[in-house]
Structures are given as structure tokens and as C-alpha cells.
Length: 188
Ligand code: GLN
Image 1 (cartoon, rainbow, N blue to C red):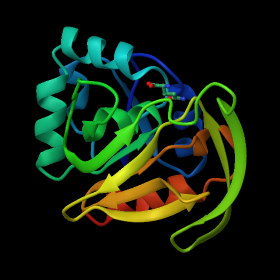
Image 2: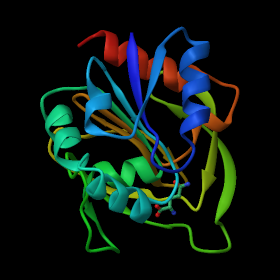
Image 3: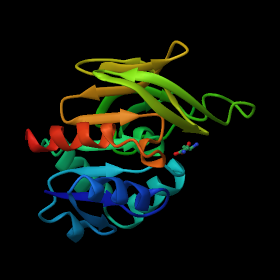
């Protein structure tokens, strides 16, 4: 199975390593042509404003949005979650805007810029969650469902072909969230 990893900025390489360890083939997405033959897409963490600007400049925003709206499985972590959200409550930008969630950028403030937690994510028990200047989800709407919360805040959600986490599963040795996404991609 060939999975595209958006490689404009941020922690894309760590996602590739996790996916390869699970036996997936990975291709780095930098231009629209790279999307050919890809059957799932990972949107990594990093800086959503930079990633959004580069998506526009590279002409990737519209083709990616169409592919995801057309059912391509998408997994957004941290900045990737922000790119997928229909609403960013503390930022007027909308990037891909395919997922019915309202997200707050840098939601934990400066003091709690980076921290770790262990929590369940759906059927995945005790997942180690690494948060780095993380957003959290304030609301899910429509068909979006909450799949994990930490301290009362929504940190993972799913809607049809889209999965998002506010944390970074690619920065731990635990591959269960990537495995979950690959199962989603296989089911399409
Ligand atoms: N703070 C970043 C943003 O707003 C997200 C941080 C991350 O991806 N680790 O885009």
C-alpha cells in the first residue's frame, strides 16, 4: 500500500519511518503530481501557517482537498489537524477545511507548550501521547467523532476517511495509531 506523506515542512520523516516499519510504501508529497497512485495521505506536525502557505504556493491545496473529499484516507497530526479543520477558533485561516471540527491552535499556552500524557484512543489502551505546542479540538460536528480526550480536551477525532490527533504518535516507538490509520486506508 502506497501512502503519501506531505513533505513540505515539519515532522514528515518520522511518519515515514513509522509507516515503513508497518510494511507500507511511502512517497513524499511536494507537488500535485506526487499524489498519483497514492491511497492515503499523512499530514505531519510542524507549523500550520507555513505548511498552508506552501500548500497554496505549490498548487497542492485544491488537489489534496478534492482527493480527501473524494474519500482518500487522511491522517493529520498536530499542524496536520489544523490544516484539515473546518474552523480554527483563534485564527481566521482555513486550509483544507474538510473535517467538521473546530480547533484551537497553541491551545495549551506557553507554560504547557510541550508535555506527555498516557490515554486511551478508541480501542487502543494507554497510548503515549507527546504534545508540542499542540492544538486541541474544541468541538466536533456532523459525523466527526471524539476518539481521545486528555484532561477534558478532545485530542483525537475521526470523521469518515479522516483521522486527526493533536499529539505526535510518530515521535514514540508505539506504532498502534499508524496501524489504525493503515487499517482505515486498507478498508477503502
Ligand atoms: N503550533 C503549531 C501550529 O499552530 C502546531 C504544532 C505542531 O504541529 N507540533 O501550527
